[in-house]
Image (cartoon, rainbow, N blue to C red; front, side, top):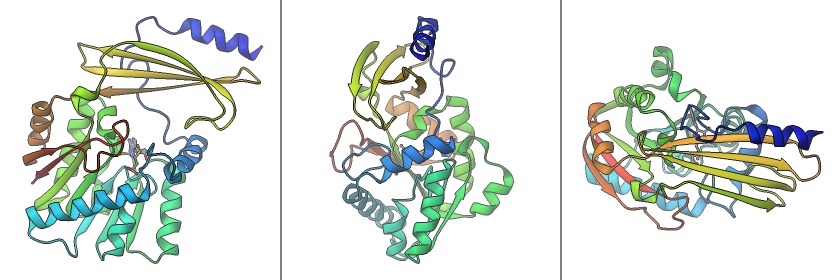
Length: 289
Ligand SMILES: C[S@@+](CC[C@H](N)C(=O)[O-])C[C@H]1O[C@@H](n2cnc3c(N)ncnc32)[C@H](O)[C@@H]1O
């Protein structure tokens, strides 16, 4: 019966998937899904969701080098990490004496981050906030920063107009000359082709029981965006879940212009810091207010 329903839903999928119309993001903020994702964030055998601790350490060391280079100091900084997940980038920075703040809208990772900071007695504040719905009150709560980081290319998942709005809000939180450091997926890394594949899995990042994983990718040339639809079908019950994620590809100059429009200039683009994993580590752009 459930398999029947699943097959019907699959047949009902639009033939031409359209980015954002047919799915925006995986449901990071769904309480149950966020518990599954927390396991993936903390799993040291994969760089999905969050990198392993040694890669994060190299990223934060690089970040502090950028601060020295561009701000002339790398001590006592007030640092905000946007969409911080379980806060793994902030703990090594707080250990070095920086005043750290992170926000994310996924409940399980943020609760874990708060508990971990308290356990380790670290100067880190975590807030459950939605980047696309930041209010004046949220901005006041966050305060002013020397540095804002936005790791892992999550910026691509939002529609360009939404991105413009939150970039301006984030820029308003920077002190004069403050750094905005963004990790982005280079335009050339998008395959820009349509693809469909089935994979039997014992477990995957999306589901912890045996399942069939159907992935459909579609590139939309007009929107310069990709949509990925994931169907996870339980091998025993035939029950399914559909996840989708859209992603806007930016040419380098387009990204530089987008940041400039938000008051962030002097962009320097660099290749991935460690080169550990092309699928899960992207290029960086450093800008300044
Ligand atoms: C790939 S994970 C990266 C997490 C963290 N930056 C890291 O590198 O460890 C993407 C994160 O973006 C968060 N996120 C996505 N959309 C968001 C939104 N609208 N507001 C706040 N956080 C969001 C997700 O909850 C998730 O924790």
